[in-house]
Image (cartoon, rainbow, N blue to C red; front, side):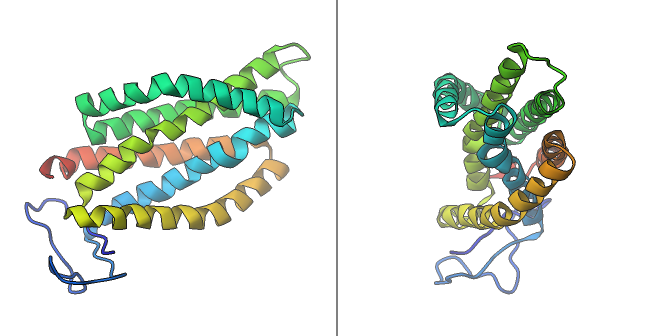
Length: 231
């Protein structure tokens, strides 16, 4: 499927020489204009952030607290229960603020959640929280906050839909993001795992906070350029 985006500063979509015209058959031909760089960067950044939810948040429970699958299951149930209330809030936010501002809110939430997870990981790994229940409570809360990041997928889907030049390009754009995510799943997880073991778990989450700064920059670009408002 072709992948196409609206060029910044242009009322009409601009196509490169490789881009097929509407109505022509083109399989596997990328059709990416200059503005596509930022969604791709955003997709890569979100892939790094996604590793926190899939890989490293469970490590907080398993490695730092030495708890098992039963604890993860209970925390997962709690996260899904909270998420059932959280998802409608994100939908109303999209309707009220639009995509670019919702991306900024998402980036702020990610930065806060990962910063808190870094604090919880540092305290649990260093023993600064003592032997009381405080350590477990903070780590549990960090886990749930990181799990809730999954509910922002709606914002990304709407963003790709608005950036697509044609309705048939939506699936191609989403497939591109999935391909980038799979590459990062192989590379980032291993690299961050080395950082976890050598320097400490808190630095993994601090790197995710740094990724959130790029996330906010892309959201600011999309808001300033007005790309999404033209679709």
